[in-house]
Length: 170
Image 1 (tube, rainbow, N blue to C red):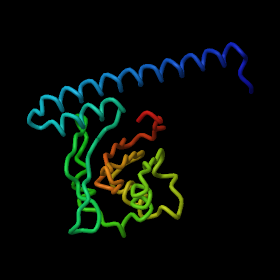
Image 2: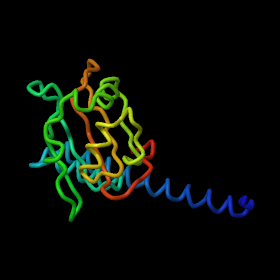
Image 3: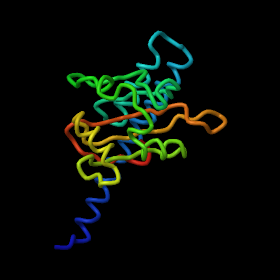
Image 4: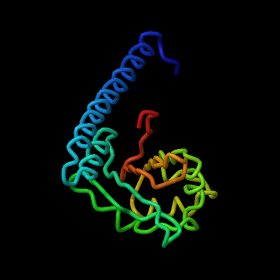
């Protein structure tokens, strides 16, 4: 049935509260990242990935860099929440021809957003096969671009075993 006005208002307040908690965690993460880049401490990239991974409630966070030798990307850095297996070995080096839609999207400077890997259509068959083989239920890749607008790599986040809706702020 339909929601009453009171139920709709309660749902709206709950969603607003969730958004504000998410936004606050993200803002705190940016502060932590700023400190890391100022200090340039040992392992700051992995520490930055942990901060970002926790801020977006991901099981894993990683950076893939453009790999001229493989005409694609190579897994460079990874953070994973306690108990989660590394996804770095599963991804390894990824050639453009293996995941053409993702490369096309990232090269345009746009993120790749997968909320439910099992629901990907036939046009995304290679991407779906890779994600499902690694047990990844949802995935987000944000392009890392040079000042000239050339793709340098991407920051990726995933959740294994649990579908999720990625927020615009993620």
